Amino acid sequence: MSARWEPYREPLSRTLLRTMAIAVAIGIALSVGRGGGGIARLPMNVLLALWPAFGGHWIEVWFLNWLRPRLPAARAVQIAARLATWFAGGIVLGFAMKLTARALDRPDALRGLAWPLAGLGFVGIELMTHAVLRWRGRPNFYEGRG
Image (cartoon, rainbow, N blue to C red; front, side):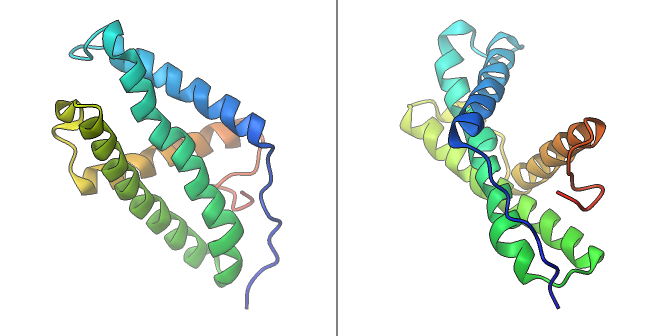
């Protein structure tokens, strides 16, 4: 038996504003960080950061609006499915980032990125994101409301 879940809705303009801001912040951090390539690589770093920021948003929306309503309501099942979705989604996003770096003629940008690391990294990003949501009193993974 499945629980009745409210679909997640957000205006596209809000999604774009938030994910672009995240991607720019990550791009700046990567560009000025050690080995980041400096300001010349800022546009590429922002573009690569859009994959987990914007793409990650749509992985979460897919889980919330498509997969979650089709699963049993048991908390353990919901947790396992969400973690598995994040892990698989992280692998897909890592692959997309590598393809993008190659297309930009910068195959060195993600040289050491292994698929399991991409999956685990995205799980970590989502857990941190949901910790911030919890801190702000918003629906989140930890409470099972979001």
